Length: 298
Image (cartoon, rainbow, N blue to C red; front, side, top):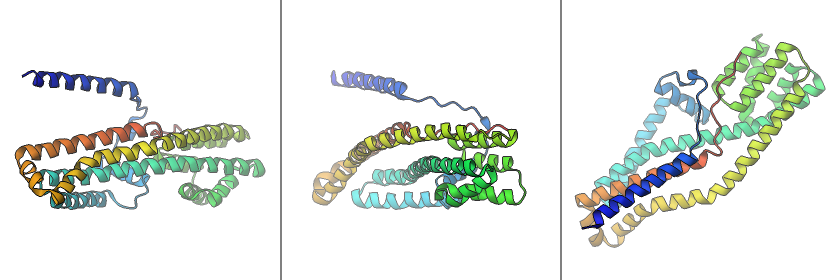
């Protein structure tokens, strides 16, 4: 009779410890610019797709998510012969694609910031030898890494059409929403407005910051790689076990998982595993996640 209260107290204690750990590890994020929240759900989703370099529209993304949900639901039902598993498979299919989008977006943003290191090097060398910001930008547009080159090709193209450099830079900064790119834009705008020749020292300081940031991220990613794979295996283990039982011992598996208690157990275990993996993945990415910029001020 005492097992029920003891289990409840143990659960409450474990939940309290979890809350304390999450509170300690949580990194606060401050929104300095409310304009970044403007736009409908479709507009915000399209911005994430663009940042992830997925060449699809928001509508196409939603259709693909629904299709994956249906396919995984059918596969889960075939493997387990459980309606709850089919429902869980549909949920994982839909939200799993969202997780893939988030991971790809953050990976591309990290690659873009590391590419900016090469951009800063080229820009600094070009400006030092040519003493012309326009010619230095043209050199970047020709030799920059592919992920960043198109932005500077757009800058040079717009400048050739007599567009103001400041307006073009700020348009791209608004689209990229990258903290390092914002600092680079601010340095270029300040140089243009003042007509000064002190761009080199500013770029040197910015380059050192990007180098330190990239080095720290690589160390963290290397340390996390094995942990991520272990987490994936642990979270998928319950479903793999159910599928194996379905094929090797159906008489043992079928009576329980066909009951309402078995269906509830599948849902609970599935939701707990998915939530645990999501929390682990999000917490692990905090150390390497590029922050959304607060915008460039004119």
